[in-house]
Amino acid sequence: SRAAKKRGEPSTLSDPNTEIRSLRAAGKPDNVCSPEDDPSPLVPDVSDTGDAECGGGLISTAHWFSGIGCAPHQLPPAFDITCAFDHNAVATAVLLAFFPDVAISTTFDSAMKEGSTFMKVAVNARVGFASPPCTNHTINNPMRDESGSCAATVLECIAALVKVQHEIFVIEAVPGIVTADYGQLLIKIVSAVKDAGYVMTMHPLDPLLLGGCQSRARIFFVLVRNDVNRNRGPFTVPAPPTDKVPQRSVLTALDPVAEVEPMTYSGARMNDDWSRM
Image 1 (cartoon, rainbow, N blue to C red):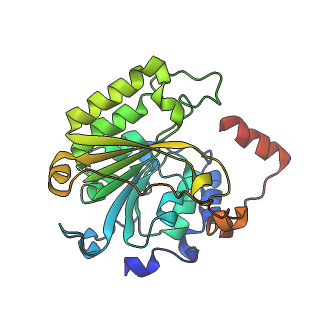
Image 2: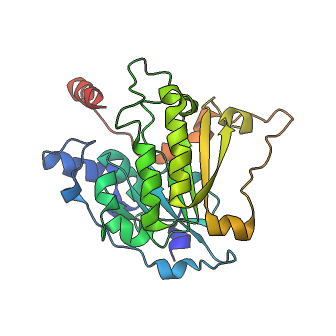
């Protein structure tokens, strides 16, 4: 079953280094995929997730801007990743190594097209997780464009909810999103959430305060569909512990991502790759 295969050793059929070498052999940069190159792996049978209105069985999830799959690795076993998309081919290869049955699309635009590999499965996912680009929100970027199109990707994600109708949609963002564009972006987010038919709550979290190994402050926007909010009440998160939480080691925090075979680079290749990131 997919539940049994959800976590574990990387699939030999989806070894990330093998897929990366294939991309290079085809003359494609590691971090660029075009919509036409959607690998379209086997679309998983969402009927076996056991989702029920009252929460029976696994909770199907869709991952927007999934990266290498940190979120599905860290979610409790009750959450089942069924589909994902990310424009970075290396990240997608790593995700597929651990979750080979996931339906994959490449870019945001290709994923949102009607009938795309991602969309066919996402419409049945009860929960969505999104980590849209934060480059133009973070205060660590002195050249950020807080009013540009990239900064507004979060608004495009919210608008696209009408296509999938997740019961709950969780957006990870950096704290700078709250004050981006002199607060205008947050005002637009609140308006977009209302137009999409959802109720939003905001939750500032830092893994360092929850037993993590580093400070990585984030704002999580939790969007709950109006009918779900009426039937089940408002979304809440557990209060952070008042006592000091034991810190985890970096090695423990990276497990099982640390098990992925590291890539080997020549100096020239490394410099070339970094220049595109």
